[in-house]
Length: 118
Image 1 (tube, rainbow, N blue to C red):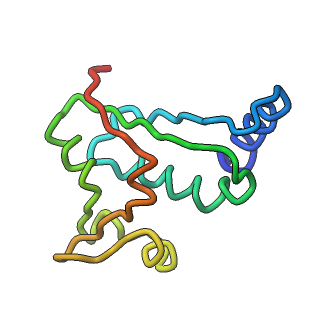
Image 2 (cartoon, one colour):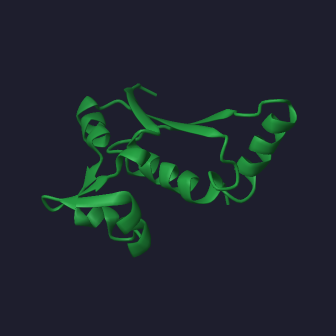
């Protein structure tokens, strides 16, 4: 639903206010090992960026655990974490290396992870 209603309307309103190249920031709270934040980046790349090529997106993932944040920053996931990812998305946005699925740099560059205690 997010990619079909809220985000396009928000972007259109920013453009209508004169922001020709707006930046949209999305916060992923309690980001843990980063799956949600990386998924948001993939959805934005697949669904929203084609509609609004001049819009920049950044996702900020926060978590209390530095250990989990370090895993999130690497962006490498075991089979169980990607088992529901469609094959075409897996092929496009992940690289299989050493039995781990690594998020491609295009997606990783959209996401930053920071320590925060909610």
